[in-house]
Amino acid sequence: MRICSFLPSATEIVYALGLGADLHGVSHECDYPHDALTKAHVVRSRFDPSEMTSAEIDQTVTDLMSRGEPIYEIDLDVLKSAKPDLVITQELCEVCAVSFEDVQDAVVQLDMPPQVISLDPHSLDDVLQTIRQVGEYTGETGRASDYIGGLSK
Image (cartoon, rainbow, N blue to C red; front, side, top):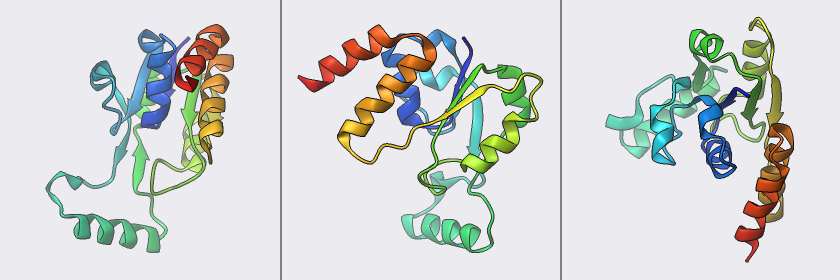
């Protein structure tokens, strides 16, 4: 399986399920576990916050949102090279990650559009369910159950 993760929490779940070798693209914000830093970036910010103050970041985000412009962009060339079977994203917040609409627009441009799942937890129980969901989509339900069991102790 070839997986692309568009958000850090999904990347951590993929690694927790032992699927790091199947991960072929991540968001620019995915930095854990350390191996995630070696993966190709399929998502990037439209601005570099590393040299900005919190107030400057807030103003930039506010300006982009007020103009209806995305904060993040998908690198379609990298996504095409990754050839994902599965893309993991979210629909909760366009400030937190690339928009679901942008993800859908990007994947239809691929030769073989992948399955897209959205993780949208609102509670701790929902977080555990997202682990189960990723396990089901990747054929790792046993590992997902074991991981959830360990977290629930």
